[in-house]
Image (spheres, rainbow, N blue to C red):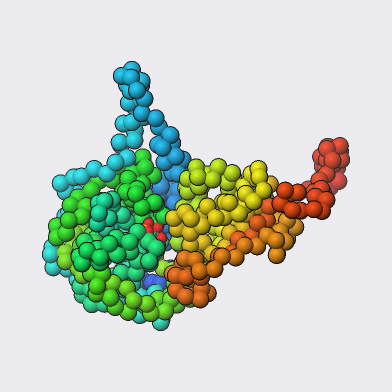
Length: 481
Ligand SMILES: Cc1cc2nc3c(=O)[nH]c(=O)nc-3n(C[C@H](O)[C@H](O)[C@H](O)COP(=O)(O)O)c2cc1C
């Protein structure tokens, strides 16, 4: 079944035993968040809270909190397919000659199927109004010392003010009053870039907050898609079917027709206020920092909308699984620029921007450093604090294997690279300044003579084939199981 929206997703999750309904009355202030954290830390199912104190609207939480649920939502089991589709598109030559063009038509039309399509109406236009209030939404307060209620899984839509390329990013929003909220788009993100351009032009930036949509659109909002690529096209490529769009009523933006709710408005880059504290992905409260203000000008919503949310905190929570899908789906794209890369892992405990391991098929001296430097120059990977590069015989997903490589193939003085004054993730609680700190790279590949390794390269212990065959053939006789 094609999953078009959150209602379809809920049906599928329920059918596959991946969703529970909570009918007991629950409070959106702290109680729901604590229930969710307990569920997430114990690999529990998605939850639909049907009886939220003071609100008609149900809340869906932890919908993306397992690889199985992401497989259901994105309708695939091998997430590398997403990046591979993009790589394949870049390889698609447009042939000369009429006959060759005709032969290529099916491929071209498959590509256009992924393009967003503008419709005149959709489920989200069932109710529209230019008077709206954040108070009508069951927005959660997650942690006791949070500055207030935060929208945590809103897909924030803006267009690049010059190129018009559409973006979606999940940026949390702190509710200030009925019509104002603070937009936590961090400096390195596309939304913040759009806002900076608008600020220079002295303009406000039209912004829509989308709640719900199909799972591929939610995924696309979180994925670090390069600036030039429309996020709705990326979502369409992910689900092999274009996203249906409708026009907003009070601003000049297009949004998914199958969303649950769309909050329309604008961000004024000059109206800066204190945002936070907020219990964050790192497991710490991110302190107060200045962020711009969003003003609500209208709402579009279904008659029966579902409020979709999540809770963040010390890993491993729901966001970790989305991060794993990003890691898998971007591997083919990393390989396109760095063909020596064999595999790549961002362990969830390192909240994704903290630590990554890359395995390479090394061909020449210094290649591990070339890969590190390349990745530190690539999109949001530039925010990764530590890279460990290993040879292709190491399984990057097995920390024992990785630690063995670091401790047997790296020398601390020779193989550690430290670069100071580099961009760091805004959330990094350890960096000396917000957004500026250092990087560490560990080259844990086997050093060669060309790399100045003068000692004898020690041979790895491995069993000989004869002994292996002998033990294999007699294994059942040992009574060892
Ligand atoms: C639950 C959740 C909350 C997030 N909150 C923020 C946030 O408040 N600010 C931010 O800059 N990025 C946040 N992110 C990460 C961005 O969504 C992610 O970096 C995305 O790629 C940004 O989009 P961009 O491509 O427009 O830069 C969050 C991610 C998740 C999964």
